[in-house]
Amino acid sequence: MFSRDKTAVDVETASQMAADDGYVILDVRTARERAQGYPPGSVHMVLESIPERLSELQGTKVLAFCRSGSRSGAAARFLSQHDIEAHNVKGGILAWSRAGLPLKEGSQR
Image 1 (tube, rainbow, N blue to C red):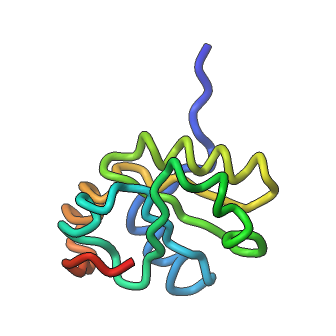
Image 2: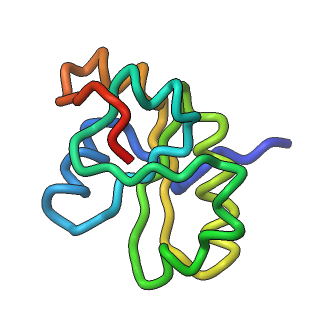
Image 3: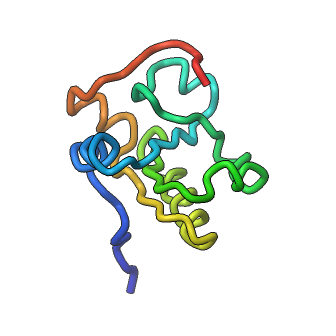
């Protein structure tokens, strides 16, 4: 009945894809959430702003994440519908943190 998201990747795979394959890590969380920690080098674009900022992502490959994976799934689907290769990072920042992957704190955009 429901199909699994075939474009979703786990955090370890996402980290490797960003390092080796030039994917942009797109943080779609709120500014308050981002201030609590984010992957170094990630780009911040609140989910609701993606349609108006779509041109900034043209020509990129995207790994979208949020807190747990729901909002980033919506972002990845939207970007895919606009011919941008996009993957949802399963488990979001919670899984990223649990995996011990690097995080920076603060409000860098």
